[in-house]
Image (cartoon, rainbow, N blue to C red):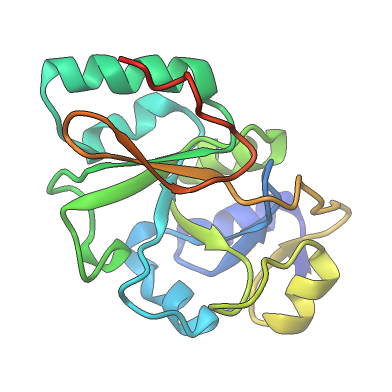
Length: 195
């Protein structure tokens, strides 16, 4: 259903399922405590975690935990790559609702997208549980028309094109001493993570 930006933001705040464009592929999103809506809509297995998306890095730090050295390493990467197409998987704090990562609540994926509309929405809704807009196991949908056809119950933005890069974010997991690339996306990490 196509709605205005204002209606979409207000609906998101009360836990409705929304979609919005990002710098990679369109997102399916809701407030974290309503994350089960995403799993149901996508027919997604509970062993596939969602990510937390925010308008700025400062909004995410309370949801991860590490020591001072780790925070310095993470901040260095964030300074170079955010906003942008990089998802960091870090140790989760106890503020994360377990439904975000039901089978392994000890970690959480976090990202700040480099997209003005996404940032405008996230700045007003606060953190959102997100994933790509598609049925689980299917390619990411790239247009608003595709999203509307597959998810008629999801609120979409009127008068806005949803085209991003069409490539999901790079996903890098912190192992405690180094980074492990879980998914290679548009950001290449060859020398970025040298500590």
